Amino acid sequence: MNFNNVKVPKVPGSGISALLKVSIIGGLAVYGAANSLYNVEGGHRAIVFNRITGVKDKVYPEGTHIMIPWFEWPVIYDVRARPHLVESTSGSRDLQMVKIGLRVLTRPVPDQLPTVYRTLGENYNERVLPSIIHETLKAVVAQYNASQLITQREAVSREIRKILTERASHFNIALDDVSITSLTFGKEFTAAIEAKQVAAQEAERAKFVVEKAEQDKRSAVIRAQGEAKSAQLIGQAIANNPAFITLRKIEAAREIAQTISNSANKVYLNSDDLLLNLQELNLEPSGKR
Image (cartoon, rainbow, N blue to C red; front, side, top):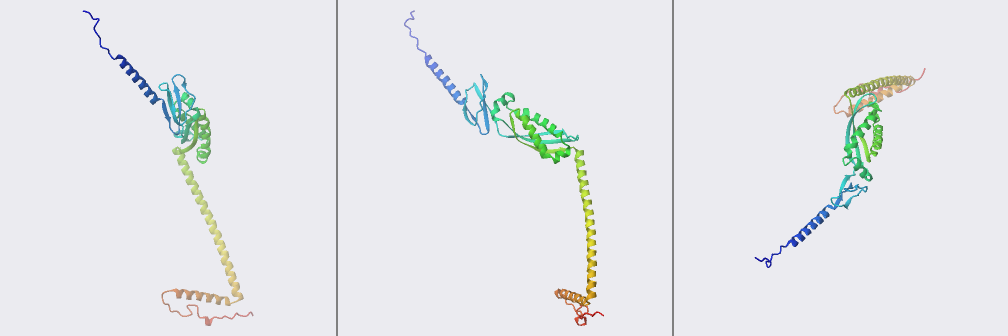
């Protein structure tokens, strides 16, 4: 049997190969386009890790940036200030246990983000802040008595901030604010403070009573002196002019008449009861014999 004249049909292999190539190239193009761009939101900064060279030293600001897909990927940091609350129990200089609460506003230094990522990673707050805050609180509280922590609270807060700022700068962390949120003492010390306040109030009350008694005494003396002086002046006036008594009678009669006239009731009295019998009054001054 001669197979030389038999024609074999052509299989379209070249077309499948070309289609496969186009699909692969198109897929790579779509993958590259989708993964070559990344966005940095407001209040954030980005650094780029390269599989070959490692972490780049450049810090990328807000906006859209380009990277090499698969070889590079971004690490985005929030550079806005964030609150961090810490409570620590420390001993004061007079051996009183004090529970102090501290609120710290921290943020990473934007220009040092590559160093922060190399040394601390992304959760730098949890790795650094608890240890340095507890150590700083214990060191500062030990320098003051329990009462000084209350009366000199601003100075204590200022010293804590100074030490914390210096310690955090070694880790490229900036502190925007440090404030003491709470101070709690032991039950014995709290009871002693309350007893001291009660004693101080009692002392002030006793002092007030003594001062009031002294003032009352002075008032009584001044009143007695005034009455004696008034009696002396009245006696002199009567001795010099007996008509002074008559003048006083007229004034008393006028006051009685005015009071009765303002009353709604009707009153019938004779002139002797009202001291109004002015005809019998001796208005002539007696001559000196």
